[in-house]
Amino acid sequence: MATGSGRQPAERTLDANLLGSNVSFNYSETWLAYSIFGLRLVMAWVFLQAGLEKLAEGGWGDPLAWSSAGYLNNAVADANPLSGLFAWFGELATIVDPMVIFGQILIGLALLFGLFFRFAALMGAVQMLFFWTAAWQDGLMAGFPVENGFFIDSSFVYMLLLFGLAAWGAGRILGIDATLEQSDIVQQNPWLRYLLG
Image 1 (cartoon, one colour):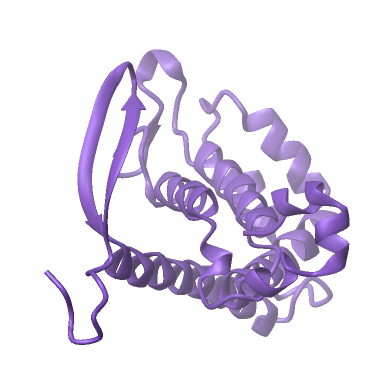
Image 2 (tube, rainbow, N blue to C red):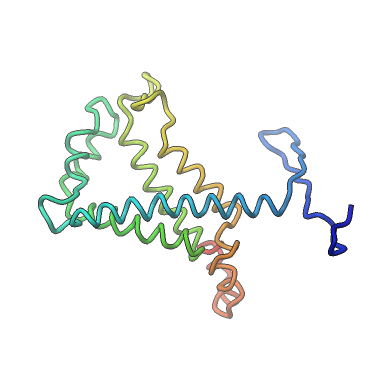
């Protein structure tokens, strides 16, 4: 069926092998682009808001301001198999705090503008991995319980969303990465594409 412009509707078929099974389904390229762009903006907001809220509380220089030490030293359950790691991070709060605050702001801006998107998504996923493992209230034999269930919490969901957005190259959709990929520097150094997209 042709559209008013004489072009065919932007619909494709995805054929893939997933866990040993052949999978095939039709999808709309237009709606896929809108959904990827929308998810990118939502994730950008999540990181940007979190970082700016922490910075507005005074950052790491004000002893009454936000600090990771309180959470790392008091909120991580003793039964968490990684509690020792997080207690060590709590001792390094003067290093961890700016990494969290400015990391969240920079990740949010990179996601928002589609700039070095895959690298930013990876850094965001690593941060979500730490947040998720810090939320474990016990270990494997208990099913890795988190506050509202087992195994899955919002940090885990954000981690998977970032992985999916990076896999789709969401930084190319109305993002700076689409222009950067055409630059001479990237053309001469194809490995840079692993950071873009």
